[in-house]
Image: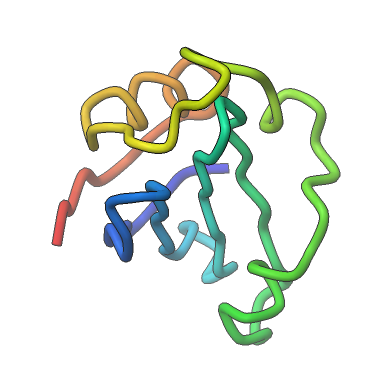
Length: 92
């Protein structure tokens, strides 16, 4: 899976949403030291990814301080790149 577009939607907790190259909406959340990324099916609204449990254990893990809620775009992309190919870094 490759990310086509990503937009930061919140600073604290750090949250992003975007679309994969297959037009699947995704949601990234970093709260209380836990990073997670959930992906909905093509054609579903972003809200489907927001409420969806992260089914991929590689994309839900502890990171940083136990009370961490802030994460830079660069660190978020580093965490994603360690687990998924990343195609286009449109930081909107």
